[in-house]
Image (cartoon, rainbow over all chains, first blue to last red):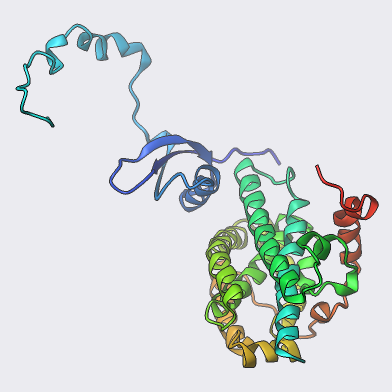
Length: 95
Length: 252
């Protein structure tokens, strides 16, 4: 019998209430529910989180590295998109 | 039997259950079929070892003769161990080890839950921590049992055989003796008859979802609680205790 690899799942962890889920890594699992168990056992052993998401890696729509120049480089010389041209009045503490 | 003697004996039973199951699971470290399951197994084994340590420490205090957790674990002989026979059974294949843990955890989770309401403060505290760990173990084992039982014809047949074999060791969990009765009466501890009902309901539901058949309650093995063990425990202890027996007090 040839060994079939389990599908890959990406794991996202919310480290505490109010923060967003962040990508932590990936696990293999035979199905969705087991993926949640495996993510729990692999990535939350040292109380890293309060919430877990798993999603099958083949369900993620990713950008194509070959298109990086068209996708990301046009933003590089648009310094006016960074809010650094405003003078903040002295009295404002939090903006 | 005095109240204190019963609590001591009962604490050692709980500790031995946790330690012997942990030792069987430790034997499987590096031998699990998948990396993720490897981590789960080692995590679970460490949970049980942590429970055993807390319980042995408490037993040492109750006994008052200066015995440490290591003395209880490594310097006692087979007949002094009071773990359930189920827990010393060989690991076998993945399904055998899984069924062993499933049947025990389905019992242990209700036992611990009842202990969180007993009148002994230390046992209450230990149980409150342990019950959360065991709830997850039970969830994980139940998921696997369903997948193996409701998986392929091969996995179904193999895990059904595991269940049929292990079943003979489940009667002992609910066969109360004078220590169980004293714990129930004196410190408001678990009522084994009530737990049997809860266990049966949980096991039936997972076994049905796994499309497996519940074995018949025929002959049941017993004796573990009283120190009469199957031959397996001797080999297990020989390996587990070797270092402390050969080099007493060795540390590193």
